[in-house]
Amino acid sequence: MKFDDCVKLLTEDVNGFKSIKYIKREFYPRNFELSKDFINAFKKEHARLISKGLDPKPSFKKLCKALLFYTV
Image 1 (tube, rainbow, N blue to C red):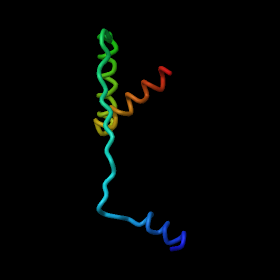
Image 2 (tube, rainbow, N blue to C red):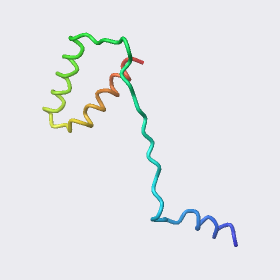
Image 3 (cartoon, rainbow, N blue to C red):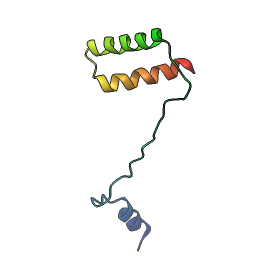
């Protein structure tokens, strides 16, 4: 069997296989409290994004990602 044939066998689309799902569990940190001002501002900003027509779940993820960006 030639090398090209082996590569074709490996790269063929096989419908019997599924990808492995990886789930990461995250827990809220202990002894950590956010101020009411921060929580209210976060909720207000999320509501503003939704009122602009963004989908709630993706906008929440993007908002959390933006917070990580600005703190680093």
